[in-house]
Image (cartoon, rainbow, N blue to C red; front, side):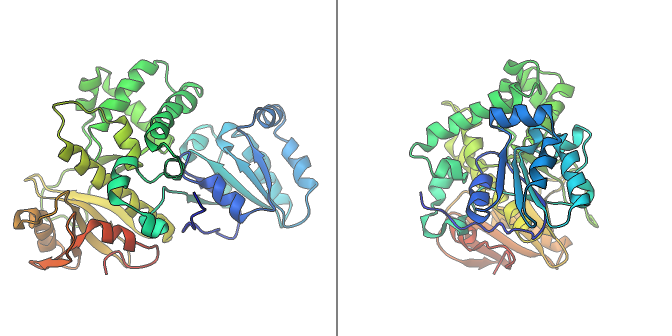
Length: 384
């Protein structure tokens, strides 16, 4: 697969680059920082050397010319090395560090600060449809997702299965994050049924027969590894009784599909609908991140059952977006958006569906989902 131009931009100073494995962090760095010094802590020799003597980094840095960029891959493997990086940034001007990892929270929990603001935090997401251009296929994305590692593979299904197993083995078991891998594996499957839904920890606990407190810990592990996230309920100036529980998503639609068990009693429409919602959600998160992170992502749901999948709220944006896995629109599908518009008349409203026509029904703009995703570009309006 030829290299795809990414929206991610170098912030012009030392920075942390976080993101799940396979999102293209190393590829982007090697493409844009070809003259940098790379230290990969996944390499056994490098891991042993810097584990024994993190201060060895100072000797390496002292041997570099002014302005040299030093990339440390998978920095969470040795959090103590950040103390040395901090010292070097205070002592020497001109050095630039790029520190990649799969979890910012994991580093914080080790008791090491994130360089006291001397390095900004950025995140790499799976591909956006507009990055792929004409090669983007909505049908394929709903099955395989948008991970560069998977899209570049000749066997996406096998790569997805291996990816999920890799995280279970490498990131969870080898890091000693859980004691009982069997219980965690059951949890990973069980919580896949919550993808795109309001999270009920008690139900997940009952389903996988694990204590509620343990399930809460498992969810935190998924978030630590950037494999999943929650979006909160939009509560600003609420005029109705709203749910307060967050919604849960795996970070990529393909990863969700690889973990979601399917049997004769499962409806393909139901699974496809959850995958579509997750695909849109991951695009909105990427759009927010690559646009500078000035907006926030929420959902809206009343106690009476009115719901809007996504609310984008910020200084310059206020949009309500509903996703429907259908080629035909009925007025019943607009109920949540119309209720939201009653409470927040300044919000733009949009329904995304699987049809081909751009419509406007009862003041709600209805867009083909594939067209919407292909047009979604950082620093440009979400709805145009």
